[in-house]
Length: 302
DNA sequence: AAATGTCTCAACCGCACAGAA
DNA sequence: TTTCTGTGCGGTTGAGACATT
Image (cartoon, chains in turn orange, brown, green):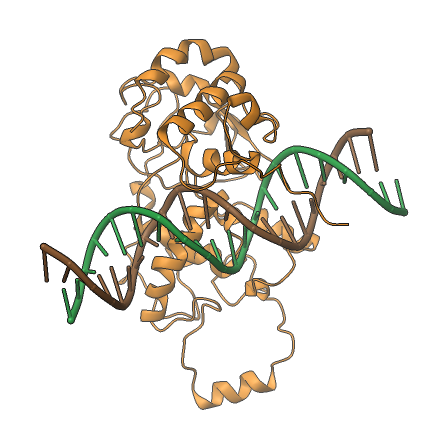
C-alpha cells in the first residue's frame, strides 16, 4: 500500500519562493496561526504543497530564527552534540535557539566537516583520522558492534553508537533520555573531546560563563544583548527563564525597529518536557494579529 | 571578460512515526 | 488491529554565487 503523496502535486509550484508567496504565507499564519499544513496552501492562496509551506516557514520565515553564520561557540556546541547524538540534526538544533535543523545540517556539511578533517578528526566518529597500524588492527578485531559509550554524563565526546546515519531513529528509553536531556556544559572541558586532542581551546576560544549574556525578557531586551548562547538547566524555575536574544535579520524586522520590543509580548515562554526553554510565538498570534497587521506591512519584503 | 570549477544553502524527496478513525 | 492522515526528520539536489584560470 503506497503512501499517498502529501498533496496533489499537479499544478503545484516548486522551487524558490517569491516575495509574494512569502507574504501570503506570513500573512496567513499571522492571522490564523499554524494549523493543518495541508490546508494552508489552499487557504492562503498558494500553489504549493503543505509540506513546502511548513518547510518555508520553519526554515526561513519563522520570526524567532537567527540568521547568519553560526558563532564559534554555537559551532563548538554543534560538534559536541554531534559527537553525542550523531546526525540527529533536529535534536542538535533543539539545543541551539533560533537555529534550524536544516541550517545546522548545511553548516555541518559545508564547514564543520571540512574543518574537522583538516584537523585530522573523522567527522563521523569524532576520532582522529589515519589511525596507526596498531589501531587499525584493533579496529578490525573489534569490528563487531560497538558498545555504547558509558559516557553519557557529559564527560567527553567519544564515538557514539548511533553515529551511523542509517541507524533507525527509534531509540530505547535510556538513549532517548540522554538525547533529549538538556545540554548542560559543566565547564569548558565539556566541549573538548577526550579523543580529539586536536580540538582544544587554543583552536576555538571558549565562551566564559560571564560572557554569555542572556537577556531578561522584560527588561534587558536590547540590541546590545547580542549573545545567542544558551544554557539550560532543568532545575531552573520558570520565572528564571529568559528569552534568548534574537538576531533579527534586516529583512525580517517583523515587529518594527529593534528598539520596539512589543513583539516580545507575543512570545510565551514555557518549559518543555526536557526542561528547556520553549518559545511559542503563536500562542498569542491570534490576539495580536490585528495589531500586527500594520507592522507586518512595514516588514521589508525584498 | 569569458569560461570553468567549486561552494553554499534553500528546497525537495521519501521514509518513519504518532495518533485518530 | 489495521488503515489513513498529518507531521517530523535526515539525505540529497540543483540553482545561484563566488573563485579561479
